[in-house]
Length: 218
Image (cartoon, rainbow, N blue to C red; front, side, top):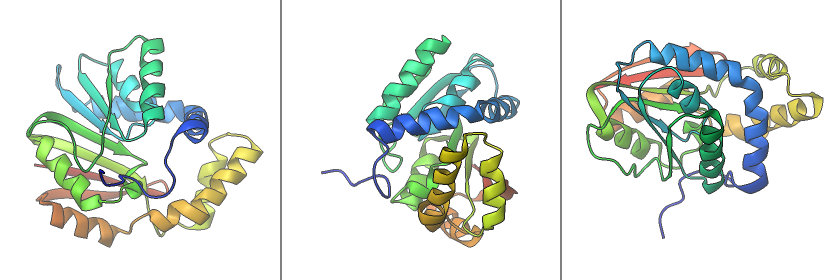
């Protein structure tokens, strides 16, 4: 039996559908991130999003250029949702079922790898980083955006309030941060240890709202 690829309960069924509906309210942030990443991509670039969930970033990026984009997620429900979203948006993105610690692609395959809001859930963070490094082309970039373990409660509260998800959803999300997500999140020192162990030689860790944006390169 393959190793479980995520911490906690799986994002399947109703939970995944709730997450997809809730995070769609942040579609402007996905569009902004896609535009920023597109600035560094050549025409025809190969892009891998690890744990894309509903696929919003990959789909928005596909609208901006002639890229070959793949999403790899361990959740069957998310893969189904992302494929449906891509069809409805009229873009070509390949969404596949798979584990971040065993990426099913050849060495030196991708110009850009994106992993947003998911890394803290991986059961094998070093293994996931090693796999990202393996499939990343020389000169390529891997970007990880995720929660910072020492984010103050007030900062998280302000961030959730800006999401405009309604009072009930906001209360649930804030509770999830306190009871689950912050416990899984990492410090800067944790990330540095993981990166060194994975074999990446070059990286930059920048603070982002309630988290980090980590850029790794070969």
